[in-house]
Image 1 (cartoon, chains in turn purple, cyan):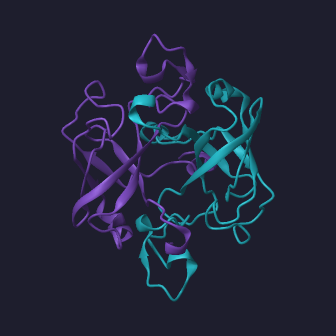
Image 2 (cartoon, one colour):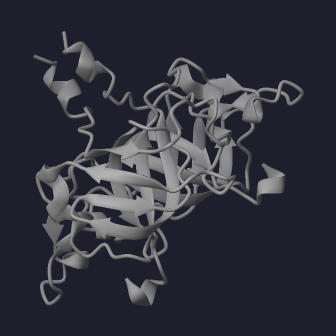
Image 3 (cartoon, chains in turn yellow, blue):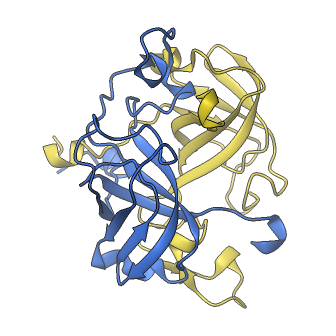
Length: 141
Length: 141
């Protein structure tokens, strides 16, 4: 049994990414840098949460970058050793204390709890932790 | 001791929000809907991660909305009972399986691990779990 104070901070994945990318070595650094289309396979227990999400929507996918090194606080941006080290909070490096991935994608198709989405750089099997709409103008919310 | 498979999914807060907002009832729904400026107080253990973050930067703050109900999958958007229920993944409701808040703010000042930021709707004491830069054009990354 986990410490109750920690239980509050445990993420419960809502699904997994299915992708042709199988290693971070082959994955582009961002979705708009040539990443393939992929699938978001949501658990049946949370599929009611998809009501209102439609083909054509731009959405924000939050993932848990499960292969990241959480002890790292500074990196060479984009792994380029010619660039000076920066703090991870000013980069999109997967290495960081809480390795949450933030991906903006477009929904191409939805069949039950399976979303086909455009350009996603997360590798096959990456846990999905949340989906959010891209916010439009205040009057349209 | 927590189950090892769960330890991988435990968030370690990197700091806390300090804000004049003390309850979700008084908080605006989004930062651009009249939220006050606030402070991000980072733990000393992660301050090296701030190297490269500068006054004037637009950043994305990820928080853990600790008062949210994680069992909720459908809501009336913006709490408006006249609107039909939608799945939480098509809304920005705090209620959702993993209540992560996503906030785009501007850095107004940085003094050691204390960032003064513009319009943030998270309440006082909200755990901070990550900071990320807003991505510019590919050529500028």
